[in-house]
Length: 233
Image (cartoon, rainbow, N blue to C red):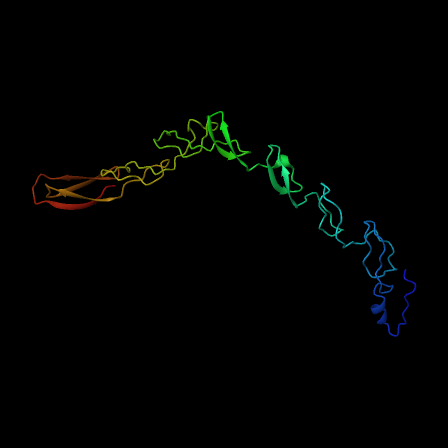
């Protein structure tokens, strides 16, 4: 209580100006449970400070005892200190990580040369990696080469391998060697390329469609050479 503070109120509104919380205009300054001082204006009507919100900056340290919490005092600090520090990893290398990060949970990115016993390849990989970086040189059942990284520990016989290279085989029902443009693992499409033929013996032409393919059967009457356009379906 600030007993030395006295005011003469001339009007009812003066109380709000000189005693907004029922006391004087001085800061309470009472010591709170957290150790900080109450920063509210004098409030003699509420003497219990157990529920007072402290807005001062927190001065508690992180779990490592190094960094000070940057939150307001009334906010729970938490256990995730975000300050960046250099920590030594179990492998012997070091990394810049958050203060609260356990070194055992860090994947070391430092490049080292490793030899892989299963395939007997060697190569530069991140320290925490156990994957061989060499390219697979095997030929898959379709005849193409595998494009995956070395995978002797996963589907070494390519039984589940899906070849996505261009097919290159002749299209279905094609008589002119037009290559299929679909992926190797897909079914070849029907040929719809337009071609040109020279009919040497033509009078009338009977056209018969068999299995989506056009066949020409010229009658045995000779005429001058004629060029005919048709679709090889």
